[in-house]
Image 1 (cartoon, helix red, strand yellow):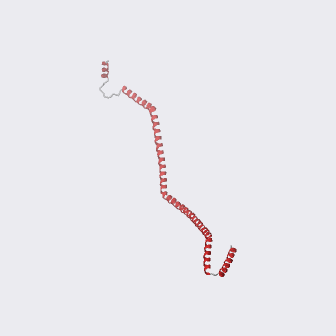
Image 2 (cartoon, rainbow, N blue to C red; image 1 turned 45 degrees about the horizontal axis):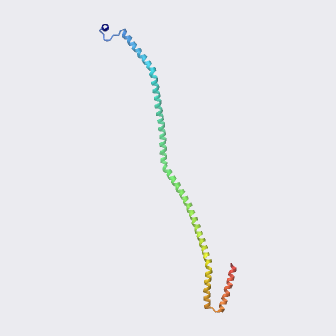
Image 3 (cartoon, rainbow, N blue to C red; image 1 turned 120 degrees about the horizontal axis):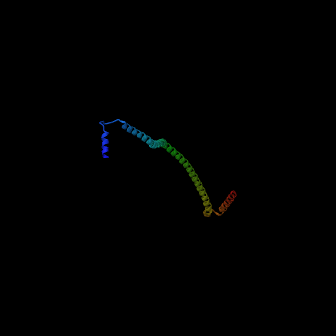
Length: 184
């Protein structure tokens, strides 16, 4: 067997390097056919799933790009809104401050008016209380003043007036006292 392989090997070698004989052409045809069958089989087996995977991947990437663009647009809107609010914050601050000042001034007026009314009421009550107290003191001290005046007058009259002048003075005072009673 070994000898046969050697003989076949020696018989197949003609003095050419590359022979285009029928056997070589058939082998080339079979290899091309195998390549086509392999390409078709791999195309059917692998191309569609890979194509589908790539399409899904492209869709996912495009969706993410669209979402990021939408989010970027929303972020730009928010930035513009916040910048607008920040630029208006000073105006709003001044407006709120002015409203607070106006409200405080109105409350101050109300408080001052209430305080004046209360002070007037207290003053009126004090004056009434003072006049009532004066009247009470006057009424309480009147009998003492009358008694004192009577004692002083009696002492003065007894020392300086005679009996006849005392009678005359007594009658005059009595008539004046009766007139004063009728006036009340």
